[in-house]
Structure formats: structure tokens, C-alpha cells
Image 1 (cartoon, rainbow, N blue to C red):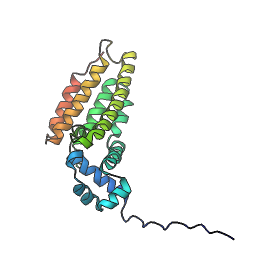
Image 2 (image 1 turned 180 degrees about the vertical axis):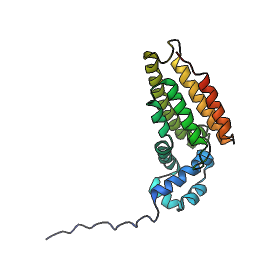
Image 3 (image 1 turned 30 degrees about the vertical axis):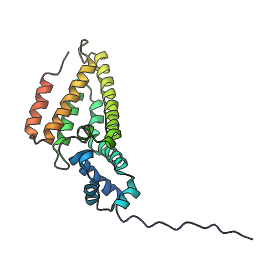
Image 4 (image 1 turned 45 degrees about the vertical axis):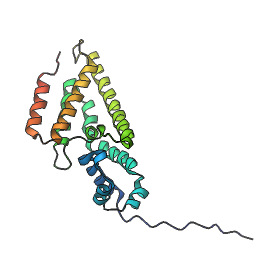
Amino acid sequence: METLAILPPKGRPREFCTDAALAAALRVFWSKGYDGASMADLTEAMGITRPSLYAAFGNKEALFHKALDLYEAEKLEYTRLALEQPTARGVAECFMRGALAMQTSHDGPKGCLGVISAVACSPEAESIKADVIARRASSQAALIGRFEQAKRDGDLPAHIDVLGLTSYLYALLQGMAVQAGSGASRIDLERLVDTSLAIWPSR
């Protein structure tokens, strides 16, 4: 006797674009931070119900990690371009001007998602902070390697502390993000970039 396989019923197709919903979630996290973004904020911006959010993205924490992936892919391309610059000063300039353009763009909230989320303080946000810190450490390691190469090439003075120089650059980037988020003008931030480049160590 022939047996027939019983197929499970097909689920209803999602009635929304997951890419558009994720982009909307990113804007909420970017403007309010992880702790400040409520589920009501997210579902309203994404145009979906809470069950649909859970079905498509998992919980709020999983949604944030996906939003952070999108942020890095779309908003932090300048960091990859910076590492390809021929000089250490060019690397620093590309980093700072790229950050400036992103942080003051009219296409998104002001400031930096990583800086905003790194200060999240709720117990459930510990994994968020850990993820942000781990991603930043990876970027810093790449920058340290690039500056070490610059020293070997004679592009940076031999006495320069590469770890200190990298920390200095990241402190500038984080300071710019905080200032941009609190309303500093593009002109003010451009002045900070120009001053930093004027005192950049040269051979």
C-alpha cells in the first residue's frame, strides 16, 4: 500500500519588506540607543506587529544585532576605505572626514550608533555592550596594524606609540559623535578635524 507524505501547511507570506523594516529599526536604535528604544517605538517605525517582529527577527536583542550589522555595512564603509590610504595621515583624515560626513548627514540621526549603545546600562544590554566593544576592538586592531606598517615604512616617526596614537584617534571620533549628537554644527566639527590633522605626527 502506497503511503503519502503529509506536507505541513504553508505559512502566510509576510506582508512587509524585512529590509525596509530593519532599516527603520536601525534609525530607532540610532536615535534612541538600545535602552531608549521601546518595542512600541520599534514596531511603530517598522510598521509591523510585535508577533511579526519576533517571527522575522527574534527578540529586541537579536533585532539590534541585525541592525548593527546593517549599520556597519552601510554607514561605516569609510573605515574600510581609510585603511587603504597610502599614508598614516591619509588614514586618519579618511577616518575623521568619513565619520564627520556620517555623523552630520541629513539621511540619518546624528552621532554614532556604537557610541550611543556602548553606554547602555540595563542588565539585558550587557550583550549589546559586549558586541559593540568586540566590534570596536576588531576595528582598532586593524588600525593598529596599519599604523605599525606605517612605522616600518618610515611614514610615522620611530618614537610614535602606535597604541596611543590609535586611542587618540578613536577618542577624537567618539568625541565628534557625542558633539554631533548634542547639536554641534558641521563647521565646528570640521574645525576639530582640521586642527587634529595639523598636529598629526610627521616624519
